[in-house]
Length: 129
Figure 1: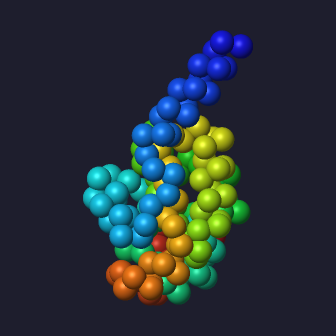
Figure 2: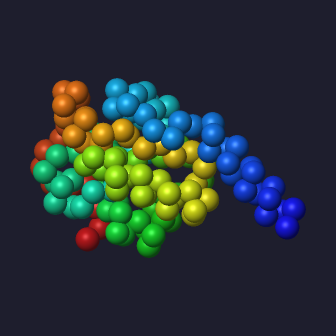
Figure 3: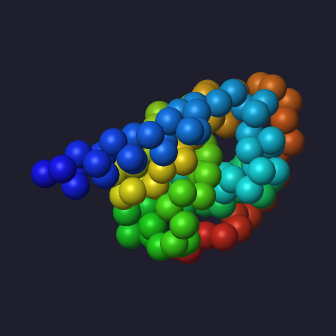
């Protein structure tokens, strides 16, 4: 029992080191610091428009594709979707899977585009269908 309490407490302390959510203007700084920007929208949404240097794993495929995030569960992962709802769900899923440095992009791609930040349009990359 003590081990469970310790691991839950440690996991909570580790996740407290990274913000739970960030403004779109902070994402590039996190990416420059080594964070993975994970887009959890669908393939067609990503193909239409996405953030440069983002990786696509649709939310519905995430449980089966966790290994693609690599073995280091402490690596910072920034999650984005259209509005922030699916990425919040992905954040919760990854927390349960043991990832400790997760951040959700507030307002998702809607806020990203409203802020005039760079985007890529065209075919999705890093995607398995």
